[in-house]
Length: 332
Ligand SMILES: Nc1ncnc2c1ncn2[C@@H]1O[C@H](COP(=O)(O)OP(=O)(O)OP(=O)(O)O)[C@@H](O)[C@H]1O
Ligand SMILES: [Mg+2]
Image (cartoon, rainbow, N blue to C red; front, side, top):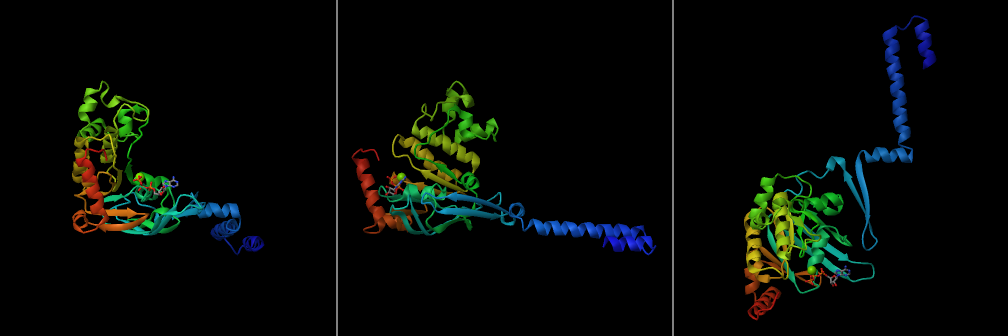
């Protein structure tokens, strides 16, 4: 090609424009050739692939490798989850190889914005179900989708930042009250105060010397479990998640705090899907549905009133036991 060009130029059969055009053609040939050769070189190929997909590998408790491949074209949108519709499809999970399945073929459809009470005997799988949503435990089989997206394919950090959990006994990091409410420093003081007011913690903060800069001891030891849950709820109010999982405190929570939490859920989280792992069974009587778990399967799933009235229902039995305990003055 070079020789042909030289020949044409020297013999006067090509002008400068032709020479320039030829140069472009020539360089583009080599660029194409370089791209093609890169694709055959393993290291370079991964660079090319990485520009199109993000691949992360995690290993489950059972040693199973989960490869998350996320097409950039199919990236998780900033709004996901938009509605909070959750589907468990033939879900199976176990804690370690050799141990029994703790969730066996679970199928559950949770509609958007629904308030779902999860109950069942101790060891029935309630907390495990929450762990699966956060992928603290990976599935052995089946799939969980939130708004149509398989959560196994959502990058872990992103998944955990898009759904919110209020644990049974929250542990707060030592620091200022404002840090517990807003660890990333995203909100102005007025928003923090209004969130505190909504959960009934404003007076507490006002009466503490430091206001928003009140010290929270390591683990939140200078606050009661109920106050720690309320602070988590204030944080959730600021974050406005589409999916909120609440593991109800079993003790150390007074009736007033309990009532406040339920009012919060009703009023402030109406466009959020709420899953409450309920220990105080009567708090979920206003919920859309109750899911009773038994040995890792869904035993009953219906409205609380239907289940309570159905003769021989497991929910009816749990409710009766709870009320009986309350009458006898036992802590539930
Ligand atoms: N880390 C773990 N390793 C092994 N098995 C576990 C682990 N955590 C829970 N399990 C088992 O998984 C099953 C379900 O436990 P899970 O904690 O989900 O029950 P739960 O319904 O939340 O009970 P509770 O009402 O007592 O909180 C139980 O058989 C339990 O023994
Ligand atoms: Mg539990």
